[in-house]
Image (cartoon, rainbow, N blue to C red; front, side):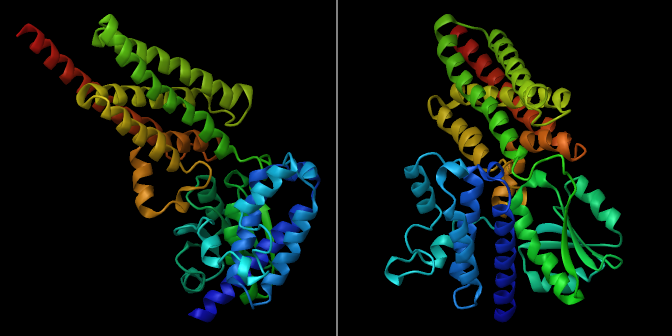
Length: 401
């Protein structure tokens, strides 16, 4: 079992070497994003740490040298100081990898910074998925398919994140993926394809099923930042309404009207940015507008209700639910399988993640799971309005008494 794990680590490291070499061969403008570069560096550092003595570390350090040879201006990293701070964050400052042991960052410390998938679903065609599952471990959930088209159909609905299939005519193992998920997901799936390649004696061929989306476009990240702003708007609005409402004496009906109006406007502006203005989520305007508006409304109704019920402590609870946990569990930057199982449950219960995924799926994955982008925030809205109604009636009775 230990030999299998070491072999798999080597394959994964070698796949990252290939990805980094391919990235270096591209024009500088394609690797300008600091986050993408540092992500690659951090992953190379982690794998170099766990692969010491296996011969892979030296290859990784060669790639690292090639990456660092490009100046900060060429890579779009800004000033030299910013460049060095980023490398330190990635665990590559000084001789941290393969250098002096007195200055080394331990493999365990670096490994903690690299996200790991939890049963990432990958379709397999033409190979025994059950035998391959034992070799690749629990980080993946291999799904047996009989036809390549069946796997691609499930990829188009985001039920799997890649399709590994044997192509006998071309004498190759094809790895199909979507660039919507980003290069990180591709890097994690390459070792599965390489395992099939080793057993079949065929070369690996990578196919992007969404070539219209650039490899470094990260639409999930853009959708996340755009949509998350509406949840924050709802949180702030709940505090403003609580303060103004107590001074002016706004009725519950008036407060709800303000909440609905602001949420509709916020949803409209964000949906215009996502589709019409920047084409981040093309074709999703009419579906994203109501969903994003419902997200804002769920945040403001929940925040207002908790403020009425438990006072200032309600602000803390709302911030934790919609800002802290809502931010951390959206699965917009990395897909859901990269969350731990407990956080996956939290993500499915909170409105923010469901709306982010629904908007992204409407634009790129045939609307898979769109209903949760409506149902979950609507449930929070009804619960919030219910609490507001109860507290309003109690306060009215206390005034009458």
